[in-house]
Length: 76
Image (cartoon, rainbow, N blue to C red):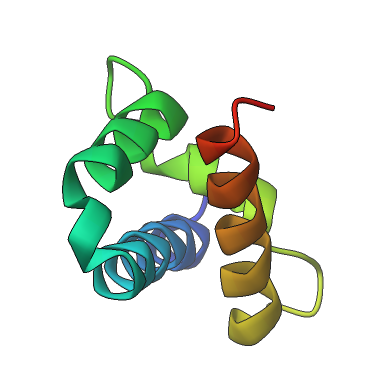
């Protein structure tokens, strides 16, 4: 994996986590649990790539992360 790809994946993870923490500050414990579940025991930031796409649209990535969090909250 190239350095640019690794940096982009890390930035995606950072953006998603920051977005969820900001949007759901009242549910921070749940957000942290969701983050831990996404990243796994090894805290693999590349797992956030499931929310990105070929266009690298930040807005769409955050929408998908939000939808996944809402689904996770509802137990689905």
